Amino acid sequence: MCARKKSSKVLEAETNAEVRRLLASAAPQAAQTLIDALSEDSLKKETRIDCAKEILNRIYGKTLQINETDNEIRIVMSKDVQKLAE
Image 1: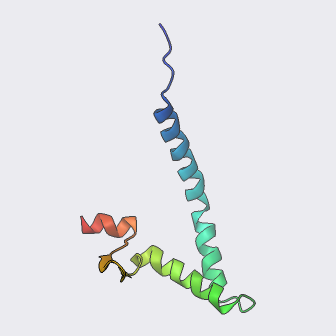
Image 2: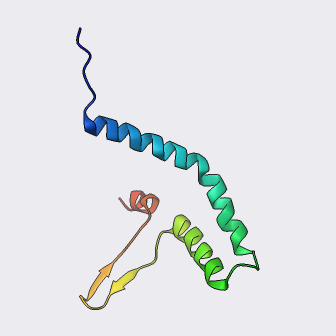
Image 3: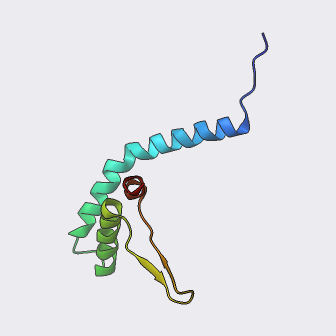
């Protein structure tokens, strides 16, 4: 029997899955860091606002974005919201 080499797409998919698994394991700590930053008085107000926006965007999706130069309206949603919309 001849062992078959994995294609580059298969290797890439396996690598991406491993990276996602590693990042997912750090997600609780990352979320807690954002939450802690909200009440950290030593941080700039803008930084705390950015943390709050990031938390809200992760929960509710990004807000409506209007591109006035092209008279377009683009709706940017988180993947979870996109799944619900389908």
